[in-house]
Structure formats: structure tokens, C-alpha cells
Image: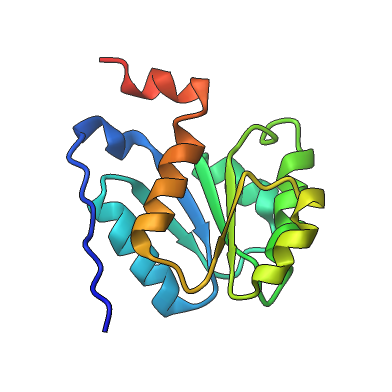
Length: 144
């Protein structure tokens, strides 16, 4: 059995960063929520919304994490909708999937990163950090 060491960040200003996770599997959603919350992020989980524009408007996230297989639309199509919207095209999007062959088609979706399931939580955290801290707009969130 493999053990995972959890990386905990103790930066108090990190909790200003909002991450929206669209995941229909409750166990996976809860695991991601707990882990990223423990690392200082504010997490919102959405399991069934088909109104991505309305959801983004209300939640105003800094990062979007999407499971590829969703019951209402695949995560790639959801990502494409986000990236075509002038208000949200710069929002970093991470897609994860148990079907790594989906990587071949992700170019048309314009996601910022892809993570194959099953994944280590530290790998997810590294992708979150890389996706977020490339964004110049987030520097305002860390201003005193």
C-alpha cells in the first residue's frame, strides 16, 4: 500500500483564492474539497449545474477544476464554453479524467492542464498552484 504525504500550505492570504470544482462523484468531490481547503483554498463544489455562465457569475472563481465525465455534458465541452466567453476566457481550467486518452482531444477544449485519474493529491495541488500563479490578476489577491 502506497502512502501519500500531504503538503499543507500555511499562507493566510491563500484563502482569498476561490476554486470551483465541477464533479458529480460525491466521494471525489469531498476528497478534493477537504484537501484543497486544508491547503488554504476556498472551495465550492458543484455537482449538477448546466448553466456554467450563471455558475461562474455567482461564484466568481479564480480556478475551475472539471471532471471530464459528467452526466449533463463532458468536461471538455464545459471548458470550451468557458474559454469562448470573453468574461472567463482567461480563467485557468484543469480537467481530470480516468481516461487519459482524452488528452489527445483536449487541444480543442483549451484547458490549461490535464490530470489522469487516479492521481496523487500532491499532483493536483501542484497543478493548481502552477495554473493559478501564472495568472497576473491574482497578484492583487495577495496585496496587503
